[in-house]
Amino acid sequence: MTEIFGVPTQALFGQLLIGLINGAFYAMLSLGLAVIFGLLNIINFTHGAQYMMGAFCSYFLLQYAGIGYWWSLVLAPIVVGATGIVIEKTMLARLYKLDHLYGLLLTFGLALIIQGVFTNFYGSSGLPYQIPEELSGGINLGFMFLPKYRAWVIIASVAVCALTWYMIERTKLGSYLRAATENRALVQAFGINVPRMITLTYGFGVGLAAFAGVMAAPIYQVNPQMGANMIIVVFAVVVIGGMGSIVGAIVTGFGLGIVEGLTKVFYPEASATVIFVIMVIVLLLKPAGLFGKER
Amino acid sequence: MASVRPAPAVSLNSDPVALASVGAARASKTMLIATAVMAAALAVAPHVGIYPVFLMKALCFALFACAFNLLLGFGGLLSFGHAMFLGIAGYVSAHAAKVWGAPPELAIVAGTAASAVLGFVAGALAIRRQGIYFAMITLALAQMIFFFCLQAPFTHGEDGIQSVPRGRLFGVLDLSNTLVMYYVVLAIFLAAFLLIFRVIHSPFGNVLKAIRENEPRAISLGYDAERYKLLAFVLSATLAGLAGATKAIVFQLASLTDVHWTMSGEVVLMTLLGGMGTIFGPVVGAFAIIGLESYLAGFGQWVTVITGAIFVVCVLAFRRGIVGELGAWWARRAP
Image (cartoon, rainbow over all chains, first blue to last red; front, top):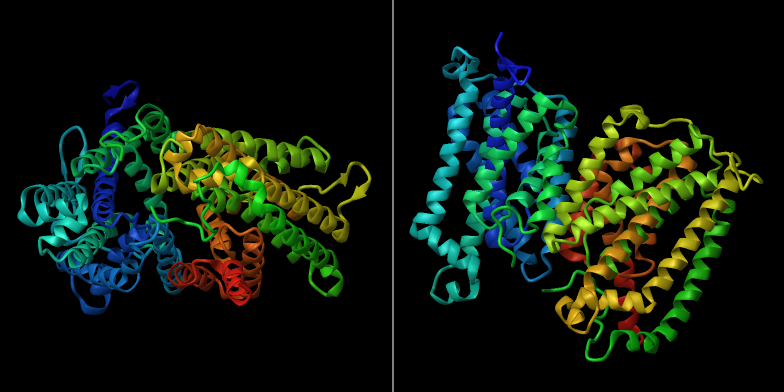
């Protein structure tokens, strides 16, 4: 068997792939956080719970309505996004005039509620979710075996991230959004309905989390706790990348996933903490984050 | 930026230090009387049928919440990782008492010192960013400590450090007697409480409030804001560590629960419910939450749901907390 730095290539590429997959989820989640933060100035602690709701939504759709994976990819983000819109309308909207930290506290409370309810009904063990037939099996690339579903996750998440980037940076709607991020009052004065835009933005960010949840269901199983630990790592990712740019969120997400995967190969004991260590280093060298700007 | 805390704004038109002595004298007299009443009530509590173990747990958490409130309520810094100080101090003091055979007073000092050191490192990192980032950084650092505690051999992973000996305090007081243990915990709590009270009303505390209100202005007045924030952070971490170290001796256990992020959330909740930036708020909040938890112990995961619901209600409709609302009601009633 061939080796690189004393590590079998099979293991190296395997971990790299897992790293890329994790990176795909970090990227999608931190992207949603960044979009929400940009306009609402709120760090959405519920994001992890909403990611979990996306996975559960696809599980419910399959279990009770016989709706498969592909439709879930469309329906779950809409359903979970709609619950996000309700949350924004009824609760978050009351907090915009207060310190941003209240938004963090409120969404933390909501995360506890959602996670508690799901754990109550479904326990903490995972529920299985089958990989869709079209994507089961894999391809032998010669140097490694690539499961089709994992390849799909990477491709789809890159596509979703690129689409989001395009929407925000290149379309008219996106330009409104960026303008409102800069100066909300002025944009409102131009006759654009900013409160509605805020609501939809939150719904979109939440939908993105749910989309990631559906994609994660076949890989990580459907588990009420799946979002809780994820969200803290994603916070570290966000601190490392800085929330200034969309591209920054995507690049940092994938990059850190790969670094984490490599750590699993070369120094497994540190794989759980490596992202936090990187965060510490970045804070020391460039406090605003790799892509952030101080404001 | 709107403010986090409900306490009246400190006017910066005059030097905050000079301002300290004016209103403080009258306020601190009322507060000292209230503190004496609280101390008396707590001293009698185990004799009127309240379970001492419950009281000790509540007191440890009350101290934890007071330490946290020093940072949030008076420094305006929301740490979402305070569990790391509670937890690491617990582990160190449990390890010292069990493995090194240290007497309880030394074990507690060792745990508290460990938290102080950790607080210095974490604080120096976290104060490099502000607001929401500060919260996220502390949360991430705490998660790092959690993984460290999960993997380090001396913490015994999932099992934690069990059956830690309580020992004899100063070689005299037998702590295996629950009542003796209770009064020791009460003494520790009251000492720390008075220290926090003193800090808040010191020139240092006033500068801290000034920084919370308007950091650029405090800097322009010549205060080194970073140093004040770091000192507040270390102080808060140290006292949180004192709570954790004491708790480990009381319950003869140091476990992962105390380092988990849910614990960081819990202390935020206690402070929020009791009243941020009030002296007694965290104590009231801690007793309320610990009481609720032991009352609802049989309901499993519903406790999480109820905790979350309290969070939501507090943020949406009850931002001043119990003590803050009472204070506001009192102020309206007697102008």
